Length: 406
Image (cartoon, rainbow, N blue to C red; front, side, top):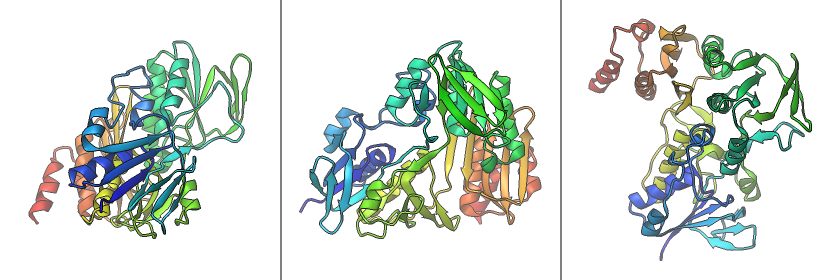
């Protein structure tokens, strides 16, 4: 009897799962159920190349000819209501029921919204249509107020400046990415934007956002700002409504184990929605990044067809801002030592976050090779002295080569 695997969601995780299933020899039916009307696409370009006007940035994930050759079926604009695992069914909003032997919940997330802050000049960025709407509003001389200095807010600020817009960024913390990078390194990210003419209002909380006939007025704890439009980039919340209605365990996302399995047989989750038990870090982590969605989905797909895979990769993500490439790997909510390699002042450096003598995370500006080495050190739980990490005369790649010989 032919097996059917269904993904709830048709984004990055679903597309990678479909490719992995076919690559690993699964010859059953594959159905991707997407609430959005657009065929699967990547989200990272929405705040970067695509937002800047590049229509040839490789946005779409599954070409029509690949879908046809691999007999993968899309149902787009079809929101899912619930899973009925006891019957092996997925129920759609129009009443249709789709049979499934295994299910991947890949519903992603939605932008975290400021209560009551909506309007023609207010933008949240998550979908292709969101990007199209914002792209149409960006032009030289427009004053864009970005609320939030995380990676999405910073990328929107950088892209807006590239289009000739004036940009002000409002951030409640003292520096961008303070919780992830710490004060010193977060300050270096602030400097990148200041050098490009971005005005930063740091340590200011938003009190109100009011749309007027001619613009937008943002009142913060530091005063009043007037602009032409506002982009709110304050993170996302996982889309868990289908999981909740289906009786799956939900706690800051869909709860899964190291194999990306839920507690319900034959139901898995991956990507932004998955709160995954990470065996390397020994805790549950929900990550909102492209690489995690891809690797988690590949692990889930393998496990669905009996190719047992633990997902234990160190997380990795990147951000392109102006002429700089920023990368981060690992997970270090707390650290007891921070080691800088290179020059923070010259914006050419990498930094390693250590806890109990182990590298737990690393961040770099224009030093992607250092991050790749750090990823291996984190995965191997290699002890490296801070002096060695800081010494630019040391070839870091030799540290991982030595580990492989031990």
